[in-house]
Image 1 (cartoon, rainbow, N blue to C red):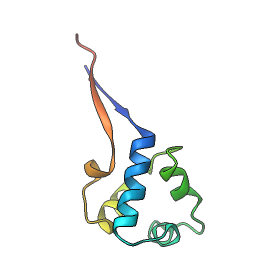
Image 2: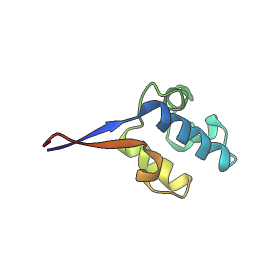
Image 3: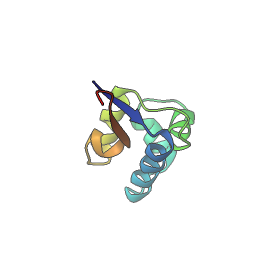
Image 4: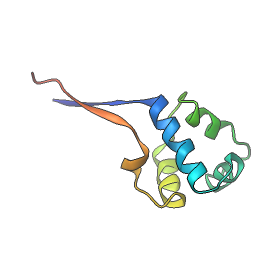
Length: 80
């Protein structure tokens, strides 16, 4: 059986890097995701939470990348 271990901190760092590379501020990302305030984006970048699937798709679109390139994770094999 396989499992996935998401690295919230590294994913958050990756979201911040992608945002900065695309010359976007947190407010603009929040607006694109339909948020009235940027708190969720700050939580993602601090590694406190992961974006929902819907928001990952929005991030992939605005950063011109794939969802898989946003998330940092390990695939774990439990069949050993």
